[in-house]
Image (cartoon, rainbow over all chains, first blue to last red; front, side):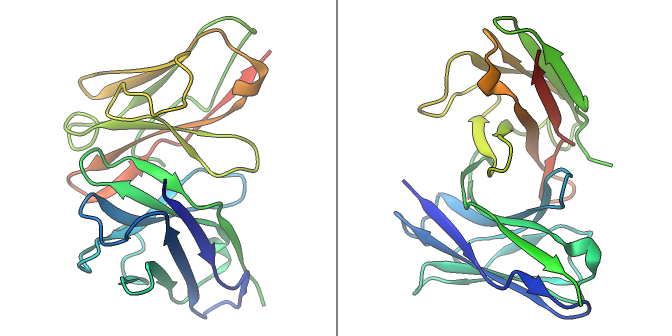
Length: 120
Length: 110
């Protein structure tokens, strides 16, 4: 059973870059069955898809965030990462990483989530 | 404004049945699998239904899913207080190339 764990700073200053890493255990990030995704949830609001990456490095990004988002993968460490640049208070949210099963596009395993607050 | 449309809230008494609707378009629900997630207060979402109507291992068979055209539904029978949660539908969108979510439905068990 896959386990995912987010890590990174909980506080980021406006205009700076948010950086998070997701460590995958219980399976290989190089599995052909999965993409690996980032989702966020502002306080009291719904879920928003940020983007996903395949172990080969192929990515899909939410068009509304595409200009500021970079998702990368490190197969040697079984990790994938998120960078979101030029953050504002509107980027304050709980950030989740999840496994995206290729055929059904279901997010079958989730990290516990990490709250990132954008504030000076 | 979410790409998929869900009612903001539903409520029903214990032991009754409730349904939550999810409406989309041909680029998402109409052409791809619908998945449902349950989010208990303060917790990460959990996969509840995948491929429109399949239950992951360990999910109670009180939960069921269905799809017709560009709409889908989640049904919960024999409601229990522990079912109080937010429920989200989601699907891949071929036009946007992203996973799109509904806005979420808050279930209250009266």
